[in-house]
Length: 371
Image (cartoon, rainbow, N blue to C red):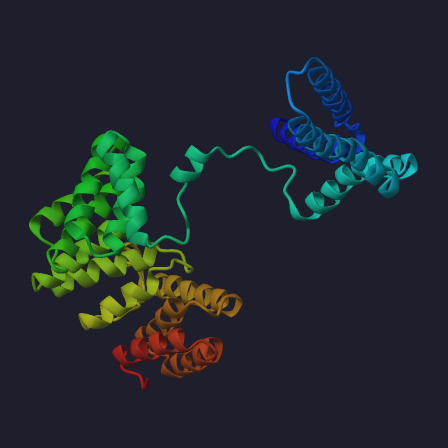
């Protein structure tokens, strides 16, 4: 509302500036009074001559000068009226007044409505100065957040926003400090502990130190399903030379993970790196249950599970891990022809995706098949 009031006031001032000269009357009529003064002076000269106060020559000179001034005053009094009468008329003035009174507001609206933003709320200058500019470099935005946090160190939300950005731009020590402050002021959680452990490992050049490992273990104590913490504990085992333990951690993650989990390729790559098959045939729990069954029942259970897996893959052929599990199951059952058939079906299903095809080939090589 205040914006419209300002616009209305500006329009009124503009209209007043246009109409004022049109409505002004000639105010130079005081030239007539000036002429009367000069005429009185001429009469005064005549009286002075008659009384002998001035000589004839002085009186003549004075009359000439006063006469000149009298003519100039008469011209000034007559000139503006003549120009006004010659250059304007009441009709023209009324037309100009209508144009100024109606035309100016209409012109202003015609320009503002398509080009302006009449519904935009007020944005004070102070807030504009504080607003982040998306065109600024990332370092400038980080500096602004850091300045804010220096004045408000207990702002847990601010530390949560800042920490991952610091980690991304390579300021690992600062990221560690930011994650610690977030945990202190924003609350403890499995995700925060896992992120802190990742930052500590990054600051150590990618090595999962004892301090980082402790944070990952705290994360799993808070949430046993935290994927990041589990993965890095596998990395810690790999770095310590315990590749079988690392493979077991990553295989367990793959068995529990949904087929569309974004970190499945990372686990498959890690398993390939430690030389472990990327797709176990059956879970450890299933194998334990099968020990108490007869050979016939055990074989029927396993084949039923394999057939269900094959049926699921016909519906969702993008699951590279599922195809590798199916091929391995057929190999364990001794159905090498079915294993070859599953291999062919898998290649056909993922052939349009180069990344999935690469993962499939690597997994098949680990299973002893041609990749």
